Image (tube, rainbow, N blue to C red; front, side):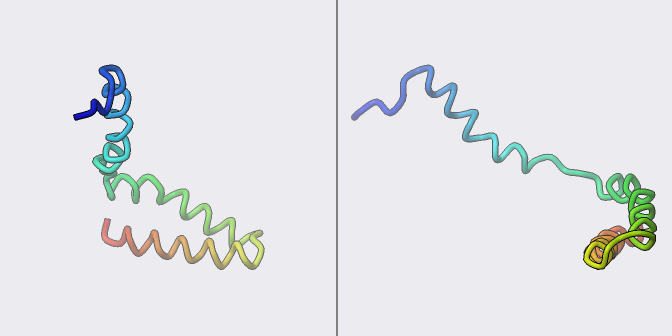
Length: 74
C-alpha cells in the first residue's frame, strides 16, 4: 500500500482541513447582537430618511425591518 503523506505533511494538511469546521462552532448571542446594534440601526434609519438616495432608502429600510423583526422581544 502506498504511503499517502509524509510525516510533516500530516501536521500541515490536518489543521487546514479542520479550519472550515472551526468557524461553525462559535455562536453569537442574539441578545448581544440586537442590543449592540440598536442605536446604530436607529441612527442609520434616520440618516437614510434624511439624505439617502431612493435605492439606499429602500434597501436600508428593508435591512432594518429584517433585523428589527429578528430582534423583536429582545
